Image (tube, rainbow, N blue to C red; front, top):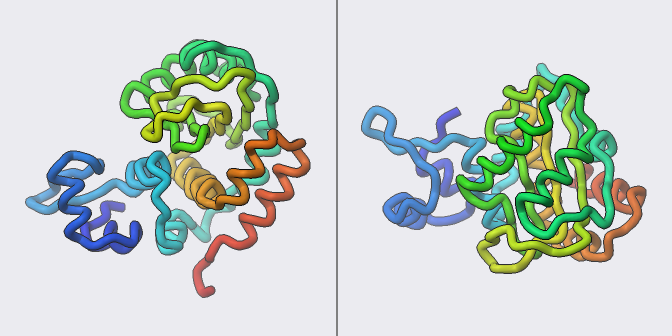
Length: 228
């Protein structure tokens, strides 16, 4: 779906003038379509998440499709697992370690995935501030995985991820999705969770997996849905 300036302003809870200012200064990803400004909802959500910008519950409704059994973030996180004390002294070596620890089908080329994640970071850091980053592929379909997963990795040594707030990253959520729709769905839910100050504080303690899963379950149950 291509979003208008008015819709984006509503989703981000800012005046339309602010959106136009962002467009003028090339801060926000936007496109000229038939003499009108339009936004891609996946890119918009990635952009808002990377800047810690809260979005309206209406944007979460856009990612839902009643004809598809979309996974919960909790399910995807349980599938991806939690890794502690992940080694690596810089962005490149950390991403290599992340790829090696991911639960993936045997036919997935891990070196290719590493290069794709690295290329994604070159387009703009996936760090969202407060020591957290969400490395992911821009086009999930290229991996041809059947099941989505979200791997949570706590780093042994915080590294520079070129975050906007300048803080080194020590916590990574890596999204692997079989489709753009599932990617958007999980990113929306992860964004919702990471905009919760209590959850961010919890992550700082590197808690046990069951504590993290319980917190995610509680947060997901509070996500607004259509008709509520």
